[in-house]
Image (cartoon, rainbow, N blue to C red):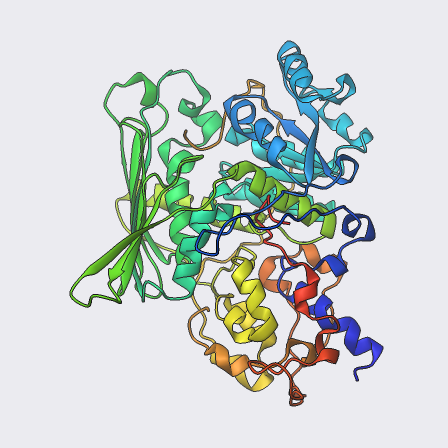
Length: 565
């Protein structure tokens, strides 16, 4: 039998070592664990796809209170309606420069008059304890200022993409939230979307073989010349940071790598009023350490296009549309396993709850459980640094090389990909570890295997900071800054040990929760290998004392599924 200290380590250290995203109800705060849960009997045959079941939202009083900052198209058409699908969040405050509009929207969503603020009174949010998190939905150049002000007011910050107009502003935002001990997440909605999550899983499981090429096109024909997206002082750029960032981000999270060479090509129609200050279209090429390449285009002057294709040696996955708010379609093609002389092309369809509800529920959960968001500030900074390099490449007419860093998924916190991976933990830990990134593989490997994992190259996060106070931007016009309408190297079988038998030196402390993701994980004990497991499960030999009530009783849930129970 394990002593109390060893047992304390069991599930808690497993959860913290994986970034806190694999969460058992037994380790949730008592007020959250007490929320009523309802399950209904299945009404469909086993031949039908599994349904999510009742959403089982938390009681209103236990949810994270949100303030939505900016009431443009994105807020009114996507973000505010998404609160109706959320399990963990509720809207309690609105920030707008238009008092009449704010009052009208407040009545629609039950926001009290005391929860209405303008940009001058924004700092008074510090006196409203109902507001725990703010969603920054403002022109790009205003992200840094209001993130800093929100952090100083003691609020957690969820910010629209792109994170900011410059990498210096991004670092300023990260530093401000770290200084205030507040969480910072970037609204990369597609990193939480079921179809994109499925492609990530296929890539990590090597279902498509070795990844070779990624192509993507995203854009639309822009209208009104005087909108903020066409003003460089507000937008920071044109098609590239607004819609091209989705292509850039997808190449990074599908492959798990970071580009080491980039080349960009900017083009605008001469004398077009819309494109006096920002580019009409931007095409770019990315090269990654493994040999993987990405060819992407973004545009403001052609009809709406939102497609992508990820190609590997054994198959491909494509989506069209691939970047929309809804209606995504995923097709997968590879050699038929039944008919060797044929190819199989299948369409995989997942339920499509609001992408905004999923990402906000995840961030709400991070606030409640004190864990690092899957897309933290470092992830947003990585994209902006690459965008700056692409602009430099287009201006200078040459390839720009980026400094290499050390690991896969270096700037995002990898989560359990779906419920099947969670269930695999009961019987075979390697099946779970196989789809985790290098950091988690190392965390669970015996010391003798620590050096087995190769290091992928990624651009590092710089330590540059901006000490000067943020400048107040005179523009308070609200618009929609949103988008248009196992790791390689280590054999997972090498780490097949009962998770409860592992020993690590230290728990992840509360202070470490807000450090960069790559610095956050516990280190494996360099001395003692796990003892052999007693007879039990035929697959992994878990035994009763090992998991206490077993992982099956832990009621694990998909951290990105706003409808999972």
